[in-house]
Length: 358
Image 1: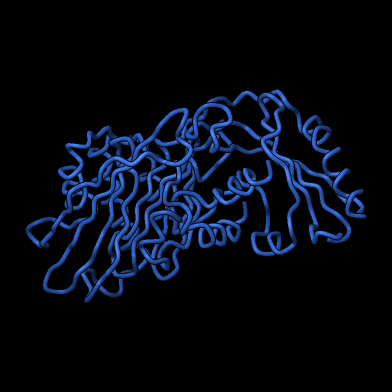
Image 2: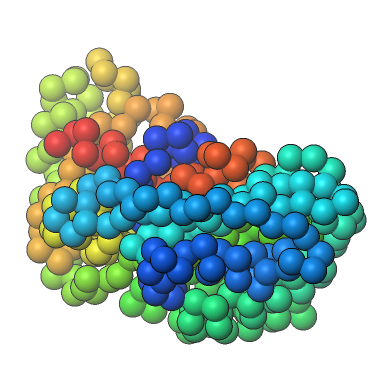
């Protein structure tokens, strides 16, 4: 998916993602320990230690069953924090899924808890400190690769760095956003398998989302070829064209990895290879659709969903593919109540749209 696609998707879907199925396995924490872990996180990862800041934590919320978790239930706990010193005050929200840390986001209420004028290199150094604090707290070994790639970016001043297992994408605009992707089958990237960290221009860690340990790849076995996927999808694309007096101008297919978000196959945290077959038309037709998509599970040939796509979506998103190209999210500019849900995944809107088409 192009970067613009994820940007728009996050902004449009943020308010409906309250019960989005997303969890993290970076460290196992029981509900009784959540408040203690939250305090350690604030001191060890975000730097709000008790000697310099006054931190007040709420009691963790009760476990709430999450949406689309009827087959394999997942539960969410939320704890809020008020952080202040003589320079300012902030509120923060930490979310735990199945007792494991998932996300953190903060919002300044007054003043400034950070330092003005932090540059790119300063932000990268702050990020390394964050990862060095996060890794032992949650036993998140992938943070070692994350920190190494950040060190490489610090040396080379590159915004895109990778090794055999991970890809790091950095956005440096009015703050820093770093997204680490865990490669699937050595080549595919997905927001479902990423860790994101935002650092403001004042040096504060404003957002962390850890999904690398969340979704697991159920299989990388691709038994359906590109040609077979197109053959499966073509009748749907042609039938829609005939019904709406259009002509098909092109049909293409892109392979990526999609979450079983609606538990069609058993677990909303499972990822499977999937073809998105996209047919384009010469005119919008009677229903104002310039293309038609068919999503096909690449390991068994089953159709996940299908439906027409309006030109407004193509123009806004740039692409309807929900996998492959690394993408960054504009989290630094979204209110914190929205961020906690927008962070989860920009591709969620497509899953919702796919569900509506069934």
